[in-house]
Image 1 (cartoon, one colour):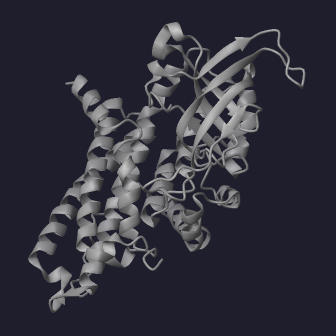
Image 2: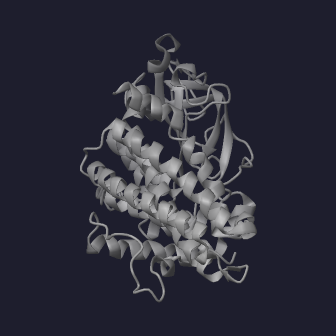
Amino acid sequence: MPDTGSAATAHTRPGEGAMPLWLPREIFDFEHEIFRESVKRFLAAEVLPHYAKWEEAGQAPREIWAKAGAAGLLGTSIPAQYGGAEAGFLYDAIVIEELASAGVSGPAFDLHSYIVAPFLIKFASDAQKKRWLPGMADGSIIASIAMTEPDSGSDLQAVRTSAVRARGTRDRDGNGDHYIVNGSKTFITNGIVGDLCLLVAKTDPALGARGVSLLLVETATPGYQKSKSLKKIGNKAQDTAVLYFDDMRVPLDNLLGGENEGWRLLMSGLVQERLIVAVRAVATCETALAHTIAYAKERKAFGQRVFDFQNTRFTLAELVTEVQVARHFMDRCIKRHADGQCDMRTAAMAKLSTTELQQKVLDACLQLHGGNGYMWEYWIARAWADARVHRIYAGTNEIMKELIGRTL
């Protein structure tokens, strides 16, 4: 894996006054940058040396979660009373950016910490928080979210996984008042290694999309079954599973929020979910360009550097310009979300624009790598494959256009 190192050297132009590639950012202070350096060191020491093996295995070992928890990567926004740093979204964004820059898509720390954990922080009872959040912060509990189904995708109205109250029944521990859950979910990240699943289930079919509830399900529960890890185009170190539920009993105490409130709870998380994708997209674009500029200055073709061809310089000039503009918009979104002010339309715009740009940048950068760009050992090849799903999940880009269009 010769191309996994930092691309920092490509952020300047050797021999040309060391002019920075990007304008200085204004949303992070000195303490943020200290944390960023600690994240970089952690990834360089604990993740990148083993990453190729994890991709081959289709998942990362549990041990890396405990190490990430000890390093402070998992609990940046979890309240201090539950073992987290309670630092906020600016710190979340730093972890996401460094994962992107390193080309690390698995383990799925971002889904665990910045998508699942916020639901518990906002809506869980104190007993639920005490039970699960400390383990999520230290990496002893790995979380997933199960919404997508084989026949209906993420359409909440068409959810078929059912949760039916069964009062008066008793499980083997003598506990009563359970939901009986039957159904299946697919494309579940952390589905193999996970210990806790935030499960979307239909509790009142008559209410359609508004008849779903969220259940906190421990994956060791009888009736909870996991498939083998699914084979994907990219994100190969990120385990992804199909889940099956066969008369699974889930205590009513594991209901998150109120019954039939799942739609409201899920909608509340969409801004952050879409911004997470956008944060990763822009950081990936920046790193891709840094790698490609460095490569183009080293690689020769027809007696000259690839960089010296006008087509190369024009392509890179266009891409650097577009990414710089995207960075300015993205930083504004990050700051507004950290302040609790980013709205649904802006988040949809961020997700739509940055993931479309990401695909354009990665495709062009891969092309400039020539045949090497198609080799898995090169950073650009893995980034290209990993990024394709960004236009699909957190709501497809077609849905983003529909959401934005409705507000006009």
